[in-house]
Image (cartoon, rainbow, N blue to C red; front, side):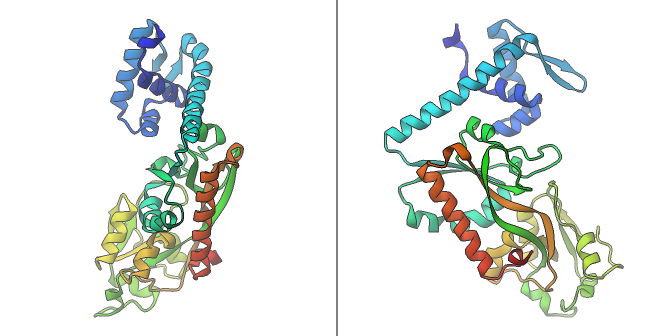
Length: 320
């Protein structure tokens, strides 16, 4: 009977079937691949049918799964829309916002109080996901359909700006700059010009995403060709790399906007006036069919205004 089927398993199946990957379904739903596998097994047992063919190189849908998937996807989207309408009828102002973890932690969170000063009536749900960065495994990944399916009102993404069925507003272009503690501007080997980097540790943000700045490209643009651009300390998250730089442990190459609060507070400085423009940018994305949703419009207008104010303040991204 349908009433005995676990909703969570149906949601997991829909995600896994859409991606043809338990791993990507797990990333989307913030659970483990093992949990996805267990939910699928539970659903297959209760339905009495096999849903996936498991191959050495991936998954494919069985005929039963292919037959049921379109209706299930449509049903989940209708359920989300029904919940949204009930909330709106109840006068509950809420908004769901997705963005990359680095942008959420380094740029948005320090500014959120300014949004609540203007809109204290809106309940925000902020979800940080690495899937909000364009990559080879997630090229563009966002569309009006995916936002509706995941009940997302606004997404902020680092990418190229091509998101079907969506209104796309560029927050700001992006430039990479060297960053360090102001203490490194003094001492035995003060940072005065790019060549002085040979006396300091290079810090590397190795977060996996397309368009990531690297020391080799920046050093070439600065005219320095005899420094080992791979040497130094490597981190798998920008927060760790920026923290190490603020502690005086070396010089990091990072996106200026992600360090703007540290720069304003004097924890980090830009030692050289050489910015490396990047192909990608930060975009705020909303569904075209939700342009009349008041809370979406209010948040979009606010975040775009914040980005423009920062650009007018003289960030390198404004000139990139």
